[in-house]
Image 1 (cartoon, rainbow, N blue to C red):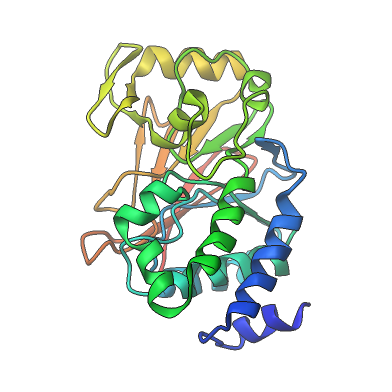
Image 2: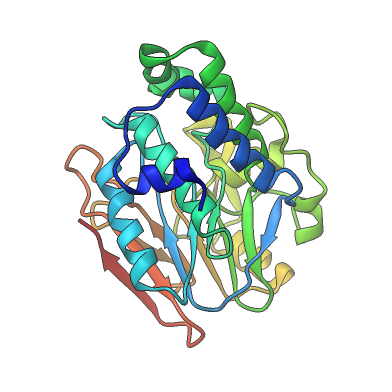
Length: 281
């Protein structure tokens, strides 16, 4: 194991600019050649929702990674912004990925964006301790993180959900994610869109003029087109830490306490398709 990664596991929380450069560089190397949609290698899965700079949530997830050593963990994005330990949280997330590269996958959320990080805290959190150059290291990590995870015939996961006008995994693979923000509308909607119960396709989302709410028709059509049974996503604050939509075929999970408003969860699914929320903290 890399010495810096081991020191993070041993509780290291003070970092030099050079150490962050090293950690970010290893993560970039790991994902540089990854497609937009990564193939999931296992049917024993645990999904992790928004973390938003809450180190205790990641430490709890770390304990589950050690406990469920035959499971594949998919982090659905939003590692920093808003919370009290943003730098420490994203560094530990990267360390977990580097320590368990075959069992931990990091996806990109809507907050892995320069524009959003400048608005919601991560940019300023980095600058309070370091420099603009250090933020650029993190931004370079954002650009290479995959957008979605998929196992044919079983499961699809991304931060937000169903994009408008997409009928195949190949169409998602063809888009360009390599940007510090989200100029591509399909990539943008995959990290920004929200589900709503109802027999409709799409309608405007108050989050952004480019975002959409997706309903039962859009969800069912997308899942049939890509040949998947269950979708996992994050992105919305859910007081119970998780909820389901569309006859329990869509699971939304939130893994931060969000200033005490959430009882945070991660969610497990195995080959039987049984969905099991797991408490953290």
